[in-house]
Amino acid sequence: MVDEHGFPVFSQIYPGNKSEPQTLPEVLDRLETDIKAYTGSQKPVLVMDRGIATANNIEIIRQRQYDYTLVSRKKNENKYKDDFTTVKQYMDSEDKVEIPDDWEKADKPGNVLVKKISGQDTCNLLVASSGRCMKERSMDSLKEQRFLEDISRLHASFKKGNILIPGKICERIGRLRQKYPSICKYYDIEVKLSEDQKKVAEICWDKKTSREQRNILSGCYVIETTQQHLTGPEIWEQYMLLNRVESVFKDLKSELGMRPVYHQTDKRTESHLFIGVLAYHILNAIETALKTKGDTREWKTIKEVLNTHVRNTVVMSGKDMTWHIRVSGTPESQHLEIYNALKVKDPLKRNKQNIHLRL
Image 1 (cartoon, one colour):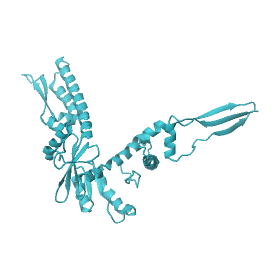
Image 2: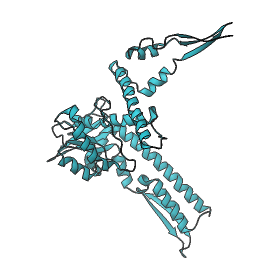
Image 3: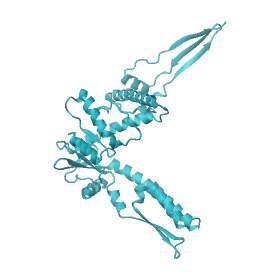
């Protein structure tokens, strides 16, 4: 759990063989015992993604009287396909004159448009993001290209007579369906047999019309919330707080090298993960301090910049003495910007040591 600035409030480790949805009741139990020190009697709003937002969990949240904001597992995008089609035509057009009815900008550049639809107990927020659309289309296009290359190789092998047995070909097609589940569902793959039903006569595949419908809904999703008093952009901003939590896991796994864990006992594993959380606290403190000075660089970039400011050890041997002198290079302007923002004063002073006397 982190606060609005990304600083850890508390952490909990669960068994690795336990799925995300099953952890929610225990999380809520701990919230109700430990969170009072931070929020008092006011209950926090739960912001969740599809991984934990099952129907049973949503019912548990309602029974415990928590407000929530989430993207549900239901494919609600198809329910609002007409609305998304209209706004996507606007976002894809070069001449953006005026935003479609009831849609409004969620961010300053206008790359995200939202439409609030009120209900009885909850409201739905339709979200169309051009950035997310480009990302999803790029990923889908790459997967589709690889799928077509693999099935074309299978067809070429069949044409050369290398593989003709129906069972073997169907097995290869089954592997393709397993490898590309998100793409194969948009293709009809047919294996035609010979008259004696012993060999394959042809392999055909055709793209379904639903594939084009998927392109229309790329970058579109529906947020469900009980916070009906909030405006559309405010609901979207609240949901985007998940990015902060996701960035925490990214820093822990990549920047701080928390994974993989090589320990064999539970206590050592827990200690390893706890040290990772403490290290993240320092990392986030550095990033936050820089942001207050207008520097929005992440730790990865900061580390790359500071790696060019080095500290060397000079070994000097005299007739009766050996000296080790630790001296730093002169910091460049980009180094000084970071040091000044963090209020670090001459952190690497010159250090001279007498190592030993020559006998």
